[in-house]
Amino acid sequence: MARPDLSRASWFKSSYSDNGGTCVEVAPDFPGVVPVRDSKDPEGPALVFPLAAWRSFVAAAAAGEFGSA
Image 1 (cartoon, rainbow, N blue to C red):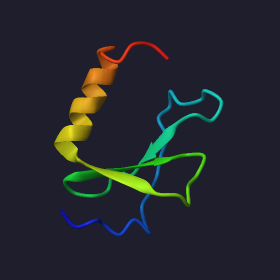
Image 2 (tube, rainbow, N blue to C red):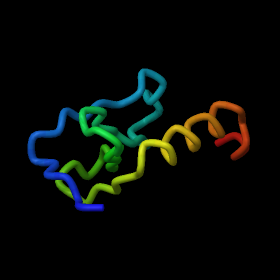
Image 3 (tube, one colour):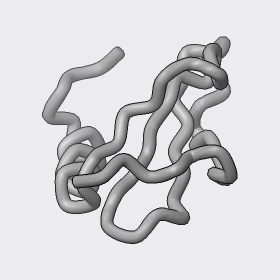
Image 4 (tube, rainbow, N blue to C red):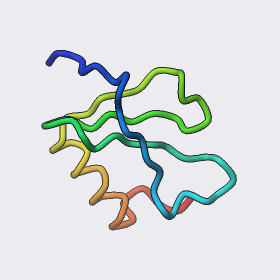
């Protein structure tokens, strides 16, 4: 899988992320993949996940499979 050019990505944080700055941002405008970065380091690296893997992770987190913070 080729890494997408993220220079024009539209990053956003979840509305649930008002927790003192410990959050991630995602860029939803890339077909088939979801770029994710640390909101405290917007110029730092981003991870790029296949869409199916990201959806699986979000579903597991919503179901509480990783415990509470």
